[in-house]
Amino acid sequence: RLFLQMKFSAFIPIKLNSERVPNKNFYEIGGKPLFYYILSTLHSVELVDEIVIDIDHIEIKEKVNMYFHDIKFNLREDNLSSPTESVNKIIDSNINNFKNEYIIQTHVTNPLLTSSSINQAAEQFIKNKKPLFSVNMFQSRFYNTSTKPINHDVDILLPTQELEPIYEENSNFYIFSKKQFKNNNNKRIGENSAYYETSKFESFDIDNFDDLNLVEKLIT
Image (cartoon, rainbow, N blue to C red):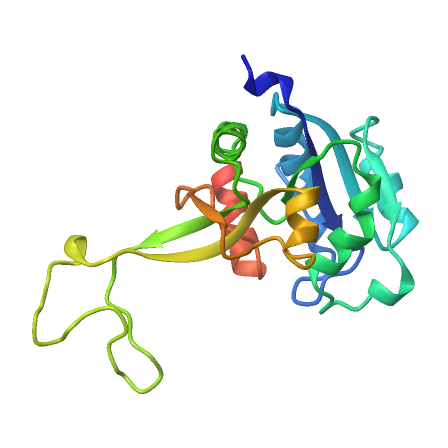
């Protein structure tokens, strides 16, 4: 298969400390730290033959190496250590660390993401040659802060399944080439980007303790 001749570098940024949930990336679920789940998934993606982790503390390498021994680490530069730093800048600082031209970037906080979805999205990227990012699709009635309808007419009450879909960037993954990233002013998403719809189950992203508790119930 042509797809199997093209390989991807998977990239994940991992911080030692988290803002909203202390020690989030290392929180144990089912006897394993949170980072274990997405890394295990990436290891089972046939198109991925390199995993690179950007870390802000050497202790992270020690923690990850307790479970995985074939991962490449890069210690984050001090000027990128702010918790509000753009992931695009972190990718840019790592761009020369990837052995492959093609990159899949994801997060520790997506433990329910499946290798099947990543493979299918990667194949879509190879076929269409467009930067790609994952989304949630909604067909619901949305309003702005002034209670004005955003995507529907209150005088024409269409069934929700007939509303035009709205897509939410869910940060599950981004797929792009080094060249596309550079040509897009060092950004993952551009005007020519495509999207890949993930299921509600897979797209669950952990932001707070309630999210952690729910994922723990789903996994265990």
